[in-house]
Amino acid sequence: MAQDKPVRVRFAPSPTGYLHVGGARTAIYNYFFAKATGGTFYLRIEDTDRKRYNEEALKDLMRDLKWLGLQWDEGPGCEGGCGPYFQSERLDIYHREIQKLLDSGDAYYCFCTEERLQEVRAAQEKAGVSVTGYDRHCRNISREEAEARIAAGEKAVIRFKVPETGVTEFDDMIRGHIEYQNELLDDLVLIKRDGYPTYHFASVVDDHLMGTTHVLRGDEWISSTPKHMLLYKAFGWEPPKWVHLPVILDKNGGKLSKRKGAASVGDFRDLGYLPETLVNYLALLGWNPGDDREVMTVKEMVDCFTLERINPKSASFDEKKLQWMNGQHIHQCDDEFLAGFMMEGLKAKGINVDGEPKERIAEIVKLLKPRAHFMQDLADQSVYFFVAPATYDEKGKSKQWGPGSKEIASAVRNALANVETFTTPNIEKAFMDLTVSRGCKLGDLVGAVRLAVSGVTAGPGLWELFEVVGKEETLRRIDVALPMMG
Ligand code: GLU
Image 1: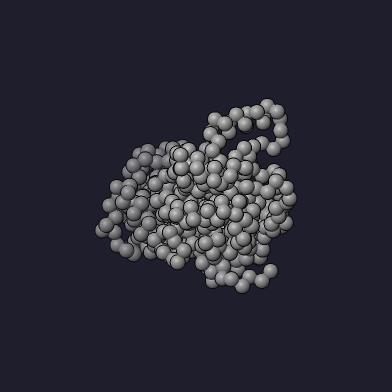
Image 2: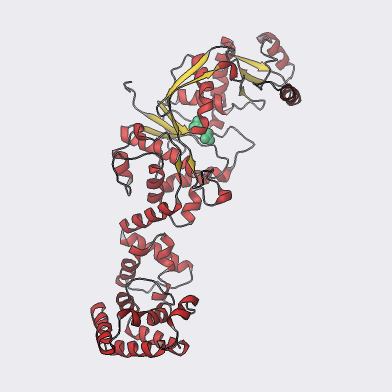
């Protein structure tokens, strides 16, 4: 079907909790689709459930979206022509629109109390009926009677008069043609007792009034779509195109939840993932660029983004892969940016790095960058460049400082003491000469002194490490450790 209208898509979260990675991926696809087509990506805050509304969640949500780089073209703080973008500020619009459905007879007031509804449900369950739900008790109350009761102070909700027969069908761009029997649908509430609209009503009214051309949302909303289709029909509005995104599962095929580990954007940020990694990884969970590229920038992904390449099958979240990808993205980061991050991390550890020459910091970043999987690795693994180790890796001690190690480390120490200009090639040469004079392998010489100087058993190339630590300090650290060796 030709798409002549410019694309307008939205991310429409409810600020009730953290931004789950599944939600983030929905936002990513909406953002990519808008950017790929020169369309508009807007943010709508669905805050009509006042009991579950959470001010903190709202702030975190906007911070997380910005951190991911998913800046909305319209929405809170970026007024477009379709605001307000908070549903709680659009009540007059919903009240205006519901009148249309009351007038056309597609909606009706329902006075049933919560107790009555519970009784109905219990009776249905007892009778074992296949379709449970509202028994349409108030469906035939006349408008006049209803309004008189409301004027007399009775409270009511407004329900949708769902057709009792027929089929509601729609095409999903990923799932294909879908049909629902109307008789299975409930007369859903459109306006609640507190005057706020339900999700279904507000979402349809806003998607229409805000000009949404495509609704990209999680699969869990697919059963809402027939209700939405019926609402569009009742209003006489053209529905948007539907794109229901496959769910993201954990590696055991279960729901990805905080109970079992990291699941929110904030969790992954705190673990040291870059926003670039998260966007890249989540985008590839359920979509592919049409070739075998994996590590991609947002621009590269946007340039080849199409809805057709979204996979209808559920995707499984693999944290190992995410880790690997983070390393790849860290490698692509600008050294100066990484240096800033490392310095912040070191300061947070109480290490004073203010007087450190820029060149030395740059050298350290160069050494650690290829090994880093997480942003905090940079600070965690660079401490020994600034302060001598206070403790030594326990396993390392028993492995590297056993019998004979003291003699080897002393020999290395003396060889290093004779290196006049303490540079990587000269240090390397000193080691090589020692292997020849002692008739041993390089591997026999390095373990004990690496542990002495760094406190750990793994790290960047030893010659480079020693050069950056400096001659005097390297020798001093070996001297400190020698008495601990066997
Ligand atoms: N407010 C809904 C949510 O929290 C939006 C669903 C939709 O995109 O229609 O996910």
